[in-house]
Length: 502
Image (tube, helix red, strand yellow):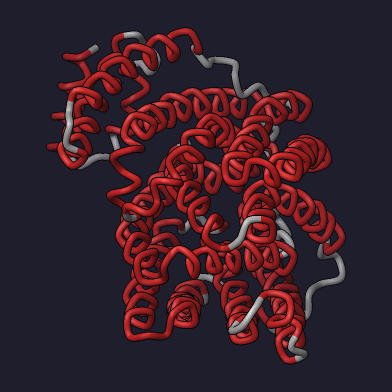
């Protein structure tokens, strides 16, 4: 359990830092690119993300899962890493060649417009570099070195901000953004491999794999992972792709802005999802089912309590935040954002449940659950976007996201654990209603947007935290797991405050 907590703290800290850097980068990038080019950027990112799922082929997840299992076979870690690195290289180069041919033939400009030929050449380079970075990061995490892999993600985001924004500012536009991504990823990948090859022999990359190495087992996991990840990614990108084709780049830019803000709610669930796959894989390999159920149910309760706090605050402050953050023209993103929030909350809860099920390796049940949600999302987007535009996309995506929670709770029970065993839903609901009354009331009473954004979040957090402890949504004993990791003076102060409140 301590390894899981240590890994979570490293990943969570990285997510917090990259989120903070992203909060600084995004409004500047939006203003420099404009809503139309920002819509094209969102479109390119969606294409790149889907391509990376096929090119990565579940290698990031497989590397973490199988290295963490640390089987008794000789040089197991080196063999797993070498197998995945070689596979990753072949797949990435193949995908990059497809992009190169697509650009060279002129099809990119014909289908998408001027300048897309250059964009797709750059995406081909970025695919290879992202693949290299993914394998190195997965290797470090599988070895339990999240404290070394995750700071590199912060560096990557910071480098992109400095280089990418500078290139956009001096006139390179969207090309500058992509070049910034390429340079940042290259630098971080070199550093990651420098750290990794201190733990794994460099020669192992070129050594022949033994005949008894279970290639079929790893490839089976990866092939199912590709299907699973692709279905999950369709939930993120179908709406963007439909909007770009059916409504144009400007509406897509507004909707992307709404998604960016709504997905702020995912930074904690993302960290949980990342650490729980390889951590739960180790527990599953030792048949510790009761501990998995306890871990899953506590994680779901903590996750719901925290994400609900963020959702309440975001809903109350959205009309103050969005125009100030993106600019006055982005008022059109407010309503789609509010419509997205319920589904984003549901998907946030599904993420850690999803990861624990994936750690067992029984992916067919998860594919069925995710595939059902994906079909719901696809059909609703196709039905609603032509008539209702961004509002239709938001409603369709929210329902698709929300169905993930219901379907993956059912799937978890089929896999063999219960993620809602100790949810304390009634207490959480009472806390949320009481805190929402205070947050919305205070937000309405303050006329200034800036003052509201300064005053409401800390007051809302204090009210919510006090209610959470007083109503035993989280007990003082459970908070010790986190406070024990804090420096001594801060730990002692935190523990005294928690005892006083509780």
